[in-house]
Amino acid sequence: MLALDALLRWLDIAGIAVFAASGALVASRKRMDAVGFVLIAAVTGFGGGTVRDLLLGRTPPFWLRDPTWLAVASSVAILVFFTAHRVESRFKALLWADAVGLALYAVLGAEIALLAGARPWAAVLLGVVTATFGGVARDVICNEVPLLLRKEIYALAALAGAAAFVALRVNGTWRDPALLAGMAVAFAIRAVAIARGWSLPAYKPRPGRDYPDRE
Image 1 (cartoon, rainbow, N blue to C red):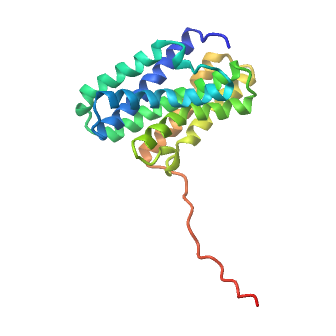
Image 2 (image 1 turned 120 degrees about the vertical axis):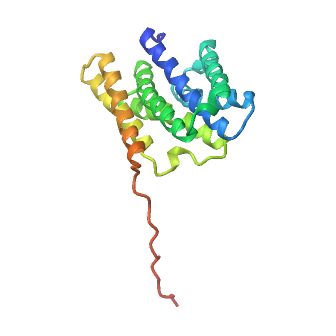
Image 3 (image 1 turned 90 degrees about the vertical axis):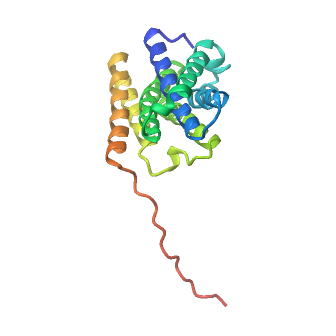
């Protein structure tokens, strides 16, 4: 695959930074040491992209090809280690940092998949994978229920943003406007869900049927 251009690179760095921050905020809630902060930040920032790269056959994964990504994640983790106590509501900060990362990575994952030759439907799915799997890994390691498995409107926001971006690109829209539109869709859906407390309806158990015994 061709190297990402300057725009994608800076967006990728921004995505790593906000996801690393969300991971470090979870580490602060768990009262980890500095090494724990860096580890959780890296897992959050790299998890989705690593799964995406492995599914696309891009090896080694992106963060092993350029030390910039590890430097960004580590720097953000250390910064949060010294400043997390200044954040009044760390869980709210986590949700908003995660929402920004979700929007960025949903479209970036889809763009990378398209550049790698994936079909549009597969690119949308890989955008969702890129946006969500780092958070899943973070929450599993930290013994939290992953946002993906809660009633949160989370994966749906990533799906909508990636689908909007891919649909625009397939129909000939220039990449930059398509990227911005996809990010806006994903972030808007997630932001409204956070602000208004919206969630998808959960399954409601019903009494099972009683069947007469067969003789």
